[in-house]
Length: 277
Image (cartoon, rainbow, N blue to C red):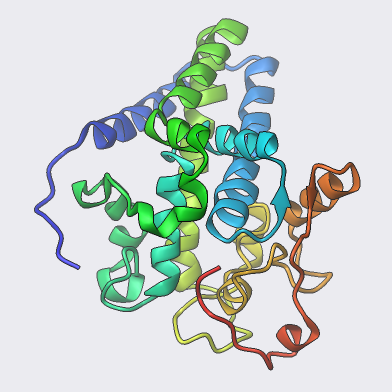
């Protein structure tokens, strides 16, 4: 896949700007509310990425109602990682071409920096292939929130400022957003370099306990690449997967259903699956 010469985009300028603001947070003394906002908004928005953008929109690993589908798109959108359609389209492309020349963020093909963050800042990927998400583009509300993906994070940033002032904005929104960025991006970079491999998947994915803790279960990346259709990425009881636990709770109260579980053949490593969920 050819890539144009790098030139700053508005998104890249905002990306670096929020990093500067996150650094400034350390020069502003936080109060208890701003610290609660920082931790709480990290967890809520991380689930928006892991349970929403990744396991639902990208892989359709469980089912839910139309209203909660929009809630997931809003929660993920608050993480300032563009819209659900953009995220899912590029992620599906990654699974189809993982570690191949056309992979958009392969450590093996393009190196650590590009896999971690470079591809996101490049102008090549400002748009997305709508054909890859035909199952999602039929919902006009998802198309709208994807087009105006700046709305959820802007609303959240303003809310943090109104609720807790400058510390709430810098700590509650900016710092937690930057932590969200790099824990999410670490799956594309570190989880293809460090950790253990249970399954032979034809690419470099690895399982990392540390990243599983930091990303609510996404660190079981080799498991995921072996069976991407599955809502559960920590296949065994000792593989902590908070996103899956939340999905089970949501199932208990009737908000989600048809959660896809790993089969015995998958757990035994006897069933290869397509890379696209």
